[in-house]
Amino acid sequence: MITDHQLRQDVLDELEFEPSVNAAHIGVSTNSGVVTLTGFVSSYGEKLAAERAARRVKGVKALAEEIEIRMPSDKKTADDEVAKRAIDILKWRVGLPADRIGVKVEKGFVTLTGDVDWQYQKSEAEAAVHDLTGVVGIVNAIRVTSPVPAYEVREKIQKALHRNADLDAARITVETSSGKVILRGNVHGWHERNVAVGAAWSAPGVIDVEDHLRIEP
Image 1: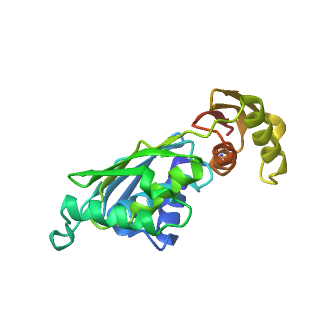
Image 2: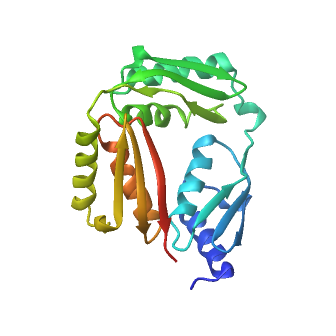
Image 3: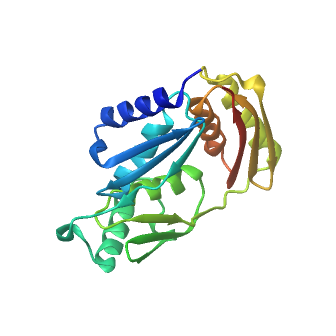
């Protein structure tokens, strides 16, 4: 059983190990496996990297994130410039229907709208803009509109789970309805949980994933 003291040190070590994060400005506290990150970073991308690093640590059951984004005054970018850069980078990304994606920026918060055929395109659009200077948050309101029968979605996800060496697929149940997927069962840690959720999102026609997986101690 990992103590809170050891878990805190493991998370701190992982943040130090992550090259895209300046761990000197991030604080970590733990309580019964729940990790809270505080402090500040210089970009939205660095904030996401800190979250991912913390979730990788064995023993983390939940994450509370209170990190602020503090950009130096010389790096603050006007909303119209952020919007133009976002539109340009979406056009440059191969495989993205940029003409079907809308961009709105207000006080550094980027809202993406429109519709795409695949979940990976929705995720790719968000990933494309989160490292832009001036971005402090993203609302991804892009819709996935590919119509695929529920039974076919469930079958594809179940096969993907069984193929993955990192999962005990027999412990996970998959329910589907109108493009929504519900995952239930038990996993051994955040890595397994992320693998299962990623497999669900990768199936064609999925527009939402409800993660009810439980992490065993």
